[in-house]
Length: 348
Image (tube, rainbow, N blue to C red; front, side, top):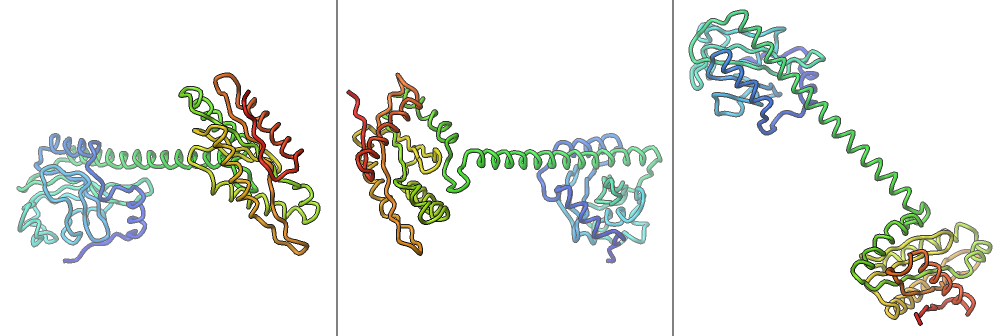
């Protein structure tokens, strides 16, 4: 059986794919149109038929159980090749369809009328068709009504496409917003959270600790002799050192710990569920881990050391800034006492 092929076949298939309606679940918007076609045109079968490369698939169907047929036997494959509706008053008297298995067998089509579903750029995607099991006449008014209902189907295609585009744009905007937020909250050199991020997430942990009475401690970390490292080995070596330090700290962080690069060679870690004595143990362990970092260069290997100030936090009677100032004060004490050490504030 010869299948008629529209002259714009490839462009037509691209237009059909653009709407993303093939193999989709039933939708009330289209079922409503086929129910109207059945009621208003007094037929037992109404279909929204889409002609794919090798099949016709029914986006909506009334009075028919099958979801698709081969394109070879589809009346609609003929309808999409014309410029207007296809009317077949009696398929048994039409040479194109008399031996069609849909005529000689189920659903025993005798009457067919199909109005093309034309995209705005002029491609016939399929049809809205009505079918009867007996020959019948079809008036011009009925044909005009079928065409109007077909236009409603293509309008729904455009509505769907506009909705899909709107969703896509929203997702792109959201992704862009998230990217901008990430850039605003991240140190570009080390990819560590920056000062802004530290305070945003730190405040959340601060209020949680205040509400539930969770112990909370704070570490202020400074790289020893960092200016000398930059002056001696160059800023590239200094950048490598900062990246290595951040990697080392990240590998030691727990899920709820809040970390940030506060600027230059200064870092801070807010540690929930941790009292000051445990925080000191963690700080000493971190200091030892960081001391294993060695920046190789053409002048001499440079071993990294850090000074750390530790303090307990009191969310019920102070701010995060207050605790940070106290941790910084202990960090200054560690610097004064020779660096590469931890100094801890113990409440009186």
